[in-house]
Image (tube, rainbow, N blue to C red; front, side, top):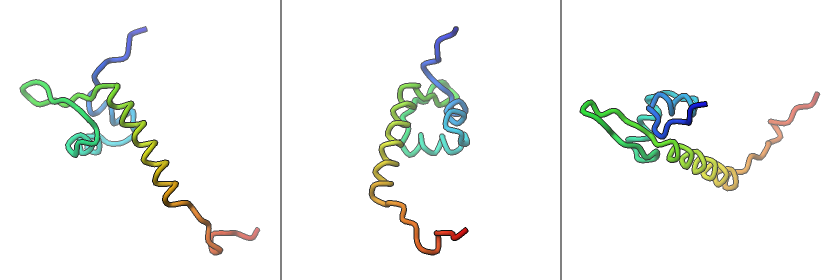
Length: 81
């Protein structure tokens, strides 16, 4: 079995995150997802370890958001069957 590649294209990252390449490009350009630009044509690459760290950060951010904004059902949300 081949080892996982160290660097991923933006399309690869988009597939992992189940989002668009444009969204991944925006994450990179905003500095939220570290990446490198290589070659004369400026192709972006994301290191697999950086992607994993990003995912873990997003889990932590989501947990913090949920803790700060608990979901509370209102009376209109409850159903009587």
